[in-house]
Image 1 (cartoon, rainbow, N blue to C red):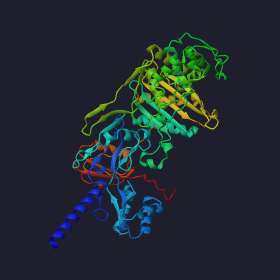
Image 2: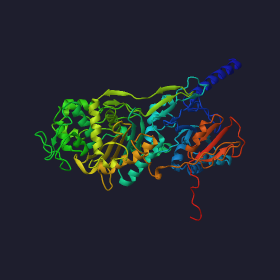
Image 3: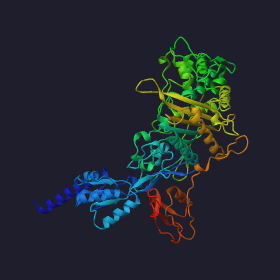
Length: 631
């Protein structure tokens, strides 16, 4: 056999096998070039810059940042015990977990993704001293959330591959991070502007946090909607979580309660029941009901009663005093099929379609499954399950002369080049009520905010407000009966009464403080909300300007030093303060990490040149966080 020909055949076969092996490695991730180096294939997260998420006024809520990832090429590790000990100390990971990963032979294993710049500096120093053979700090990208916990259930988060897993990050993933059609060209994602106003959101977050501390409930939900177009201005759910550390919180904390928690609404629901009865012609403004002896009929064994004796009342009194007996008698004026049909038209028993994932439909049984007690019981807000977002949508019909609006959490979508892709505006779903009925219900709710009404603690000086309170009993899962200890306190408000601009809804689940009544602990929250939002939005209060909330809600942020002839010192500034630098066209800003600025390049005092690149390295250690020797 010709030796030369044989060698050429071996070389061809060997080259083909090598090419095949390289192709497989590239297809399945990356190939090792040498110790501590990696090859990132086209189409990786480094080729796509995920678009930002912003509030309605352009304040950044989610941005992409370069965050190093620690990997180890296990064949190069000389002392697994020593390497694991060093990595555990710097990265705050259990030593045993690292040892388990290092035991995998011939693999490039990930130890920790998106480490802080401070951790990266320590590891780089150890590598330079030759103490971490095989350890690599790989260039990687991750998501940074400047507002931390704020609007966490709306914004959502991304996974290790920078793809969306929850919230807007998930539902708009293809727009935020489009697949590259050209491997040689970097792709930029679209900008998602939310309907949320982060100023309102942060103020409401603090109010909700105060409620959690005062009443120790299982959860608090507070929602504020623009009554004219369905925009959610505030979407608060407590407990919440820091989006920058989402994996440290369990699923119950991350649960998006406003769209996923179904509960019996209690007396707040009476406004929708009574509106249905009036629209169907069973009840008019002149209708009267004797509530003195409670509600009874041959089909129920336990009578429905009130907390007090309200005597003979009309529909206004049913709302003003929140009479269970009056609402139950009013339900007798219509048939159950018609009542069920109206509740469906209000949107109960079906999702609203808001631009978030995981929305539940609530619970509204088919009318064929109703018992003899169902109609009067549903009329007072029991034997039906709703979500908070359904209640907001249903209230939009009262605020818009009977027309139901779709709630929105996205305001607009803008391309990377600044072109408008889609604008979300007022979206009528259907006409539910006659305008006269919607106006009458608002008038009755306005009476509830007056002297003697259950919602009087929600009253705002200078503003006519329509209110309905609720205190719902909760089924004990162990006994199957209503609990003597668990309640849901709530209040729904629409304002101004004569020309609605805002819809507000407060839900306190299982309060454990001095009171559990919606009129006592949820209604005052409406007053606090209104006194902040009305002047902020410059709404017409029908009189003098409404004073703002106490200064405890005013969150001061450090000022951004201006750039003149030199680069200023940004040390200690938080991420949210730095975001204004993105608006400068004469500067290329690159932010690394999250938290507060620890160092920068170029250093402070460097002469400013147009187009220069500014790198800011952040860590989650607040400035002056250590204790002084004198303390």
